[in-house]
Image 1 (spheres, helix red, strand yellow):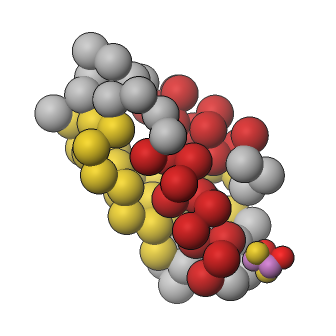
Image 2: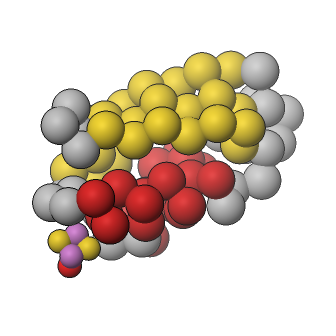
Length: 68
Ligand code: 9UX
């Protein structure tokens, strides 16, 4: 299992946080996704044989936010 952390811009409320969290958890191989509105960051634990950091960021971007 691999742990990644990256910035997420564009979240302004708790519902945004849920949307980003669900987007990350929807990526195959993701075990845990913690998103902080205050920190504007996502911390994700995933199986690197199933998902990549690029895929995680793509999921965030597809949901309408900006992964850094
Ligand atoms: Mo409401 Mo958070 O539009 O964007 S879900 S502020």
